[in-house]
Image 1 (cartoon, helix red, strand yellow):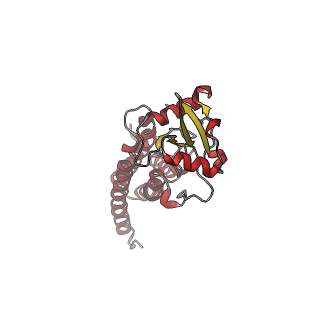
Image 2: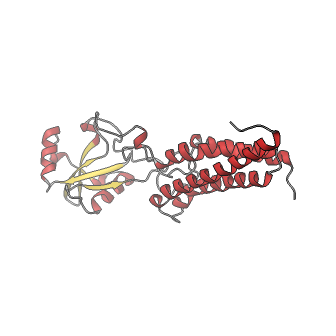
Image 3: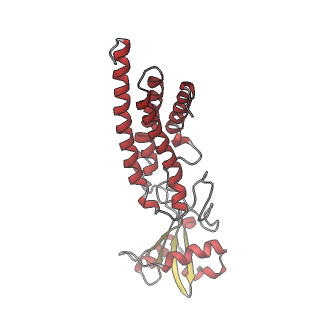
Length: 260
């Protein structure tokens, strides 16, 4: 079935708007399905009593190791993150670490939790709130779930997620190019190239919308999606730029004007 010129223009403009505003959607396309605002928002760190950092930190903040909370007495969600934290291997400094994947707001389906455990304090808070002494199978740990005031949280643009960069330098300009291709091709005889640019925008939009759900469905790993998708979007921007330039030159030739 043939699509009318007006319908083609409407589709192109619609795609352009969706691409350009994709970073403002409830769940931005091409973004991680999990909360990723720096610092790692739900990172759990625990140092065991056998490490001298345990004694130093408990003394510094006035914690009594005898006040340890037994993990078995915690609510299920809280107990689970504690057990997962200390179940791994410690790093070179003796800390055990586990980042709880919390599904981002706006994601329709979730393979983890929507909210972090309410037992612990996350984000920026004083030591008395972000540290908890816990006991797991008789072993005591100092658990940290937040950051202290004044800590470097890298909250500027340099610390943003790859999804933010994908939108700012990829999807936003691609939306502008798709809109330009739709308008210029509508007023010229080079509609095939315009259709190709519009179709490219549609493919990128569909891929970006699907990406977080492929992660949730365990089809691909979260860390294996972001940067390859970023590169693919930049490639699409390059192709669309060439297409729009070709359309503009051709349109200028038919109207006797020189593109600015």
